[in-house]
Length: 214
Image (cartoon, rainbow, N blue to C red; front, top):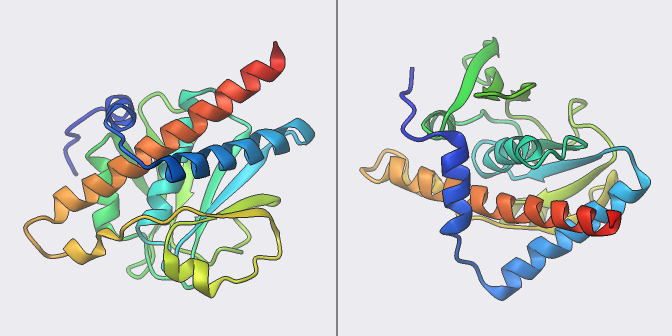
């Protein structure tokens, strides 16, 4: 059992407050927000599919924080999924990192190679199923907007036929810190950057929706 070191909501808000990104990066997040808002005008819901080669670290972090953001901003018609270009496992360091910020992981289907987790957080009304899978796995609902989170996945997925739109939002891989003294620090840094950008993304979607309703 991993001890929670900070509450999920506090980590999420701190990540946004401490976020420092370039204008180009912010513009990219706003373009993604524009597309999501545009699609929600014509659909009852929209799905986001975060794609990284192994679906073990960055894409999982983006999915989990989007899951939290959808409830935090009461945007329950936005659903987050993730996938890879190959199947590995939801890396144990990613799991531990998220547990430290208040997410609960209950084993739904045990496998030494690729266990499936039911993920929730305090006060959540639902769970998501977390495990490593190919991006077009049947659990990833259609239609979706594809968001690649690593350069390798972007280069090796030149065409995603079921995607409404595709964006490239890469993050530095915390894998390089595995089995070092900075492992926990680096995973939390990556999680915090992703959480901060997801906050900004969903906040902009919320603002755009509210403006359209005036």
